[in-house]
Image (cartoon, rainbow, N blue to C red):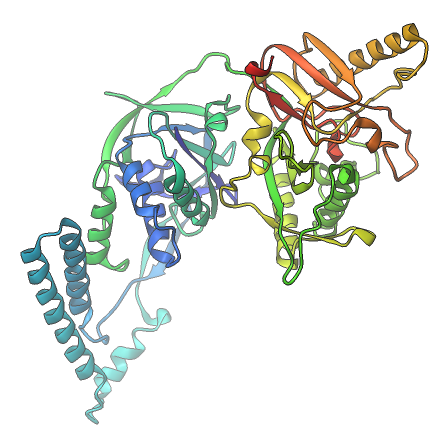
Length: 554
C-alpha cells in the first residue's frame, strides 16, 4: 500500500476546476499531487537516486482512493492582475524553448538507448545552443541607437501602465484540513520508499501558490485506520465527479510539456480523466484506538566533536519534562492549552493533550535500554489551529538547535526524524501496530494507591495486586480503549533491558505531587487494539508506555 497525506497549513485550498476557472476544485485532483511531486523533483538537485523509479511506480498504480472531508466554498473574489507584455524583450524565448525541447528529446533518446537517435538529438542540441548564443549576443550588443519609441514602449512595461485582466481565485475551506490518497494494491520497498518519503516531505504547495501544504508518506496502518470526518471517493465506471488522475508515462509527459512552456506560457496539465463515486461507508471498522494520534519523532545525535549521552530509560521523567519545557519556551504567548495541559486559569485540562514519550532500545537480546530519542504525541482529535501552534513551537525550537540541557548529565542533542530511520524504536509502527497483547516498557504510575504490593502477608499482597490490576483496567478505558480481558502487574518489564518499576520511583520526582506507586503490567484484550497505549497518571510524561507483543509470544 502507498498512502500520501496532504495537510493544508493555512486551512484552505485554492484551485480552479479544469473546465471552469470560476469554480473551485475539491477534492484536489490526483494529477495535481503528482505534478507537485515532479516539480519538487526538478527543484532539488540532491534528490535520492531512487526518486524517479518511485514516481514511475506510482504512475503505474492508477487512480487512487481519496479521503477528504466536506468543504465550504470561499467567497469568490475576482482580482485584476497586469497582463504579460514582452514587446520590448528580445525574441530569444523561442530559441530557449527550442533548446529545452531538444534537451528533453536527447534525454528520452539516451533512456531508450538507440545510438542513431542519440546522435541526431545531440546534433539538434548543438544547433539550438549556437542559435541561442548568437541571439543573446545580438540582443545585448550596444549599437548606440536607442529610439524614443523604444523608451516609451519600455515604460509601458511597468505594472501601473499595463492593462489588467480579471483573474478569479476560487477556493474552499475544508472541515478537516487534510486529504489522503491511497493506492491499496501498490507497494514500494527499501530505497524506493525512502526516496518517495523524502520527496513527499519537500512538497510545499498544491494548486495555487497560496495553498501551502505539508505532505508525508503515511503508514499502511494509518491509511487503513478509520478516517473520522473524511469522505471516501473511489474510482468507478461512472460517478458523481470527474477527476484528473495519472497513468503510466505521466512523468515523461510532464517533463516534455515543461520543455515547451518553461513554466511561462499557457499550458494544460497532462492527465487522464477518471470518474469518481462518493462511497457512503458504514460504521468505521478496525481495531480500537486510543485518544492519541500523530507522532513527531526526535532522535538523539552526537554533537560536533562529542558523543551521544546514552541516557538510560530511568531518566524518562527528566527528559520528557525538559522536552515539554523547551516547547513551551518556544510556543506562542500564551501557549496553547493542548501543549501546556492547563486552562488559562491554571486548572488541568479534562480532555487529552500533548504527551511526551521516551524511545529506548528495548526488546532484543542485544538491547541496551538507552534512550535513542523521544516523541511528541498529539491527541487524535486535536484542533487544527492548536496543531499548527504546536508545530510552530517545534519549528522555532528546531531553528534554535533542538538542544535539551539536563543538569550534570549534560545536553541532549536532537534532530527531527523526517526520513525512515532503520531503528525500530524510532518507528511509530513499533508502538502502534494492532495487537491483543501489550506490555509496558515504562511502568504505569497508578492513579490510586492499591495498598502494599510488597507485604509479607500473601493475602494482603494479593489484594493489593488485584486492586492494581483494576486500576490499570480503568486506565485503559480512560484513554478510549476497551477494558482488557485480564491484566497482570509485576515488578519487571517483559522487555529485555527495561528497568524494573522501583527504579522509576518516586514518581513524580519533582513538584511535590502525590507520589504514585509504579508497576509494570501485561495486558490482554479480546480483540486487537491499536496504539499508542500510554497508561496511568504519568502518561503525559512517558510513564505507562506500552509495546505490542506478537501472538507467537503467547
